[in-house]
Image 1 (cartoon, rainbow, N blue to C red):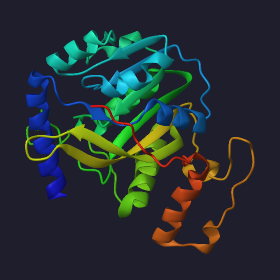
Image 2 (image 1 turned 45 degrees about the horizontal axis):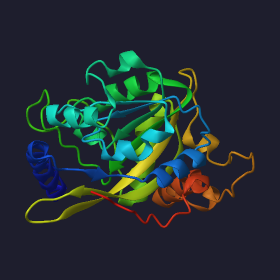
Image 3 (image 1 turned 30 degrees about the vertical axis):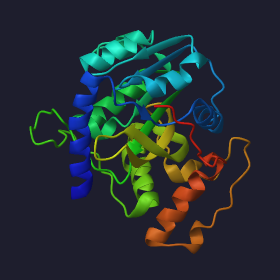
Length: 275
């Protein structure tokens, strides 16, 4: 945990330097991987509008921009906003981006762990989707938030995300059950992908594990839980339920893997990275 906070601090400082040098591109997914995630979530369109929050220099946005009629982006950094405008994206104010909603697809990639008020942001994201739209959230796990500039002044967020659990499966289960589900954000697909960003003089690239979730907003009066929809695939077929044979942490791990069995991408996750 301490190492992750140190690494994120280092990355934040390097991020500032890269802004001035025109460096710092990041890679989360390719167009092919993004389309596989959309298909796995059952999203077939419309592809009218996309907004990428905290888009950086827009490298990842550019991979999928051609799929949409209108592409919006935000970033807190002035040099990065200039880079986004150079790519012909419509740059929105970081505090007022939602005024242009609703959007068919919203990207929130590696932002929740750097956001001072992540719960407030998730509620805003949900309300800014079109009916049937998709929210794509990427998050480095294990979860270790680091806020460069926040109300507390100690690099800790003002709002707490209750993400617990041992191992990747445990953290995914906690994120879905304790963060997404209470906000009526239903997870339709997920995948683990390598998160690559340009490094510094000491290391050419930084490599972290990103977990990408595709979410759909549910009505506020919905009271579903993960266990209520885990057994049904989009085709209506039932998944094999072996939860009765498990208990405790084993049950939690098996449950999360069953919930997303239909959504695990049959991809070797090979990346064609151009940075």
